[in-house]
Image (cartoon, rainbow, N blue to C red; front, side, top):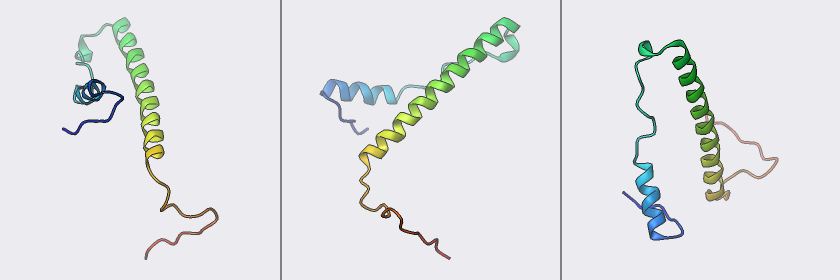
Length: 83
């Protein structure tokens, strides 16, 4: 596994370790949940999805920061699709 750069060796190792951990918590079978439990689980799931969407946006912005724009077309330039 390649080490992600961080401000310290420990931070980089910690980041690498955390990326290898499971993302989704174990789920109970839905048929075992009461109405109240199902509503609470739905609310938790929606919060996780919102947090995932925000994290995805942060990752996209970080990739944009790290990607040089040397090959981007100049403003006003038209691009032709092949074929």
